[in-house]
Amino acid sequence: MTESTTIQAALQTIITALKDKPGALLPILHAVQDELGYVPVDSVPTIAKALNLSRAEVHGVISFYHYFRDTPPGKQTIHVCRAESCQAMGGKHLEKHIKESLGIDYHETTQDGKFSLEPVYCLGNCACSPAIQIDHDVYGRVSTDTFDRIINETEELA
Image (cartoon, rainbow, N blue to C red; front, top):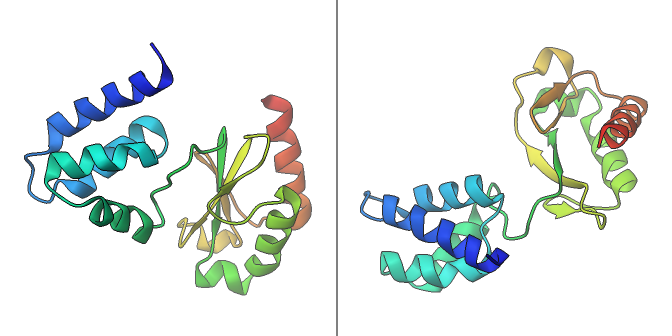
């Protein structure tokens, strides 16, 4: 089974299960991203047709919400907290360092496919600002040196 066939099968299963729900577009998009890690551009026409929407309407929702991505994510996703507490404790400096270290901006993936970078507006770790999350692990009081150490350890485990 090709990757495209697998994606289409998953898409059809999700659409069939959710298309009759009121306001089905967002639940479908969330389910697709949960299943595939992203909402493939090629899925937009299929979703639009199933919900009797235009492709522009579906694309508009995907592009409006920062949560949705239309490219495959890296093997690991780094979320950088951008809430006030983290900003006050050096978050902007950390954010700049992370972007420079990885060579990417928010909503991008490193060329080797290891890391994606996403902003988040609170990790609930305000007492330990600035904070980041890598996959499901939250780190507090992250300095540029701490970040570099965490990334090096993460790459060694991969």
